[in-house]
Length: 553
Ligand code: FBP
Image (cartoon, rainbow, N blue to C red; front, side, top):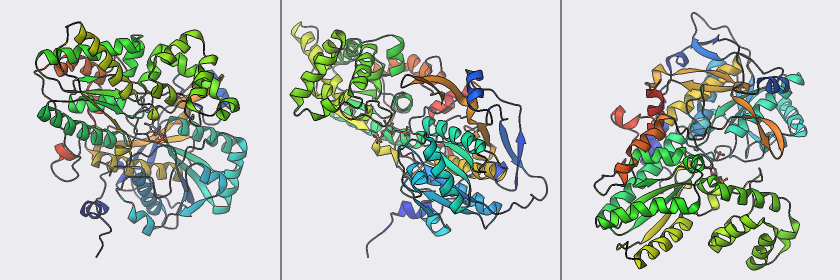
């Protein structure tokens, strides 16, 4: 007979996520003091007159019987890139909705935010939910990158929700999707249509975090998968002793993933984009930094090693950023460019349109990379960094520099390099216990916020380095996390993105140890695969980033 599920899938279906004590029985809400946005208070209050200043909420155990709640329906949306644990947010949401009132219903909007606008949905019944407990992926309802930002989309959403008797929409997404969730919440209050909107912090990139949100879900699992792979490569490198591995890691702009993987595996080199920008380094500076380590190791007879590269790196090199910005502006709705046939014609066109400095940089790049910089843009008009093979660019430049040094007699090693890109390997992995528990708790939290009539909030679960029973669940007004930023030439309210903090404990740990890790006498760490069953110190550990950040608090 054909097997339909692996033994691990079968076992995980029965896993019961651990939850904070407050979510284990009847729940009530405790409200804190009024809040303010992190910056630009006046401008944000003006834009969000109804959802600005709301208090932070903590969920606490209910003393005595909870009051009965009339039945209601909820719609849920998965927005943007996949992140391990998304299914568990939906399972936690579903189970808590049923606990609140068994007649409550959950609808899933299909294919991301466009499902709400176009009225594409499915009812998520117990049978469906049970198939997806503790699984990776977003395939239960699919995801998408359509942005909810136009009034006609919001109005369509009202019609669809009213047809289905939906009282609240839960948007599971990153900083942009949650910003838009708040705009939607505010609009629905102004329209008095009675539809609430609650967000949940998702992204493997780890850049949706702040004073209230300790980490976004998915970051833990994705980093553990990549770290396992890096550890395996390091063991191979240490055995074969013949390759330098250049490993690019997803994460869009922020370098949190590369940093976390470095903390877990101790590579010889880990580049951090935020540091490159702060030190105004150019490509040659980065190449020199890598070459120095390669030469030192070669002098000790070691012609192998590992280099971690965050995928957003090139956008943080000041001159590259200018070039990319010029390309973004030039390529926006450019039919003339689109109509050109052949790479050479496109290359000549681009060169003729750039400023002299950018043109020189563009010409100095390997042709393949230069072409990648002119590929299609994402819906925000930005270059898709996941498609730019920075690791190949660096291998080529490092190889050239080493050849020069060899000719000059100052390098006697052998440089043979392999390139890797880890991103999709981790985005849909079976969630770690941490993400399974965290996500299930986030989903349940969203249900209780909805039952209490809240809108414009993001579900939060904190105290995450403690055992799950001691976690604290609640809600933070999305406006509290906002500031004003220039987007497409206009000032817009957005949730502040968290890049790697160069004064923060995780980066400072890297700084304190990287010379050791580059040293020929250093030893790699081999994290091994995610463990789902076994001792808690093996199975339930959060990321090193979170542990180092929380240790200082
Ligand atoms: P989100 O911010 O939407 O969670 O995206 C995460 C991410 O995996 C990035 O790390 C990566 O740059 C991007 O998605 C790639 O997206 P796509 O596969 O849609 O090109």
